[in-house]
Length: 205
Image (tube, rainbow, N blue to C red; front, side, top):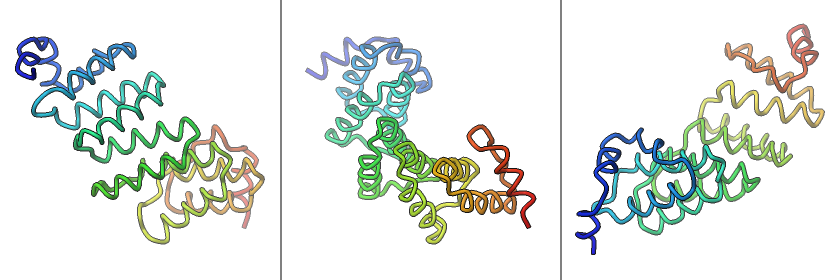
């Protein structure tokens, strides 16, 4: 069965598998994604994880988050190797669907597979908590990341926290983070932060 499959596999697909960035070009709708996923999972040996990541990323960019999660689950069932990028994409999909708790479950699964998160992964989880108006939970996670030195917050992480704190009127805490950003030389992304808050943070003694 597999031998027949390989004999009939499209030559264009063979070229694509040699150039993973080209995977995006094959994905213009969900049918393309399903067909390509089926082909990839039937190949022996399985394609490298970068090909699966490109497929997941393509589906995610089309905002078919639940479909990306389904592919991720099938990959796990087939024991397809995963890496930090696979985990980050799956977590992003969970958070975009307001299922941040499921995102934390994906994070735990990654730890079990010896896949360690990076600052982008934690940014995504923090943003998911803020989207769900769970700012106190986000604040706990943010402090844990710093205290336990799990990652060094970047400007996106700071801005996510400042946006969430400001949204719920926790201006003192937001100002403290603004000052911390200044001390660390992080550039402020002002689109979600009141200008008056920025001025106040920089003039307050």
